[in-house]
Image (cartoon, rainbow over all chains, first blue to last red; front, side, top):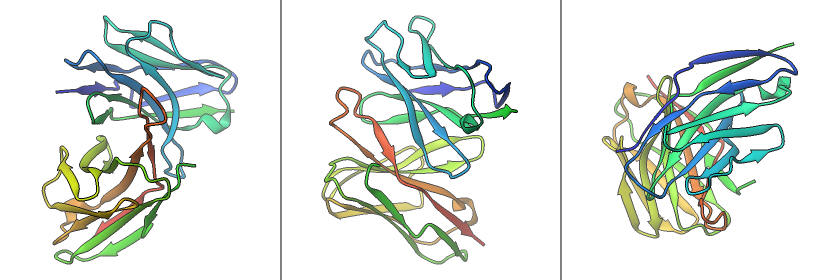
Length: 112
Length: 115
């Protein structure tokens, strides 16, 4: 079975600061992929960043980067230079064979 | 834009009535999924399809059925709605062009309330 755990139900950060959202996972599969999705108040699920588990190099997308620690089964998301538009629920997800499993989500608030 | 639409976007119904939600995609993707989102649970897989007339159960399939008679449409049916099925329902497609991750992209969601 695959599980994803996000231990921070809520986080807040000052605008322009950096924030890190935590995610741990468990899987018995050797090939898998990890994702962070963002869900703003509009409810739309938006892909933020993805990581192939066989790659050691951490993925980056503009202000978003991950810290992938495969041995520790940890996949955290770092948001640099936080902007008001980053306020949303953030979901960590793990894809093994066929299926995508989500964590419970972290609500991120940006303080102006 | 993954070309996914869901209908209706909002629905209020009564316990015991049948409900069908529709997911429509425009890019002929083979894999389609239905999830439900509830507070504290993230998104959980209800059913998925890997081709026309080919479907399989997810982790929370009890009380739901699906059908896929055309590549572009994936229907989710609640045969007799219950209050526990009040939720937000998301459809997703898997894009094989996002090799090798086969990333899933989501529709806008349907908010269903069962009174």
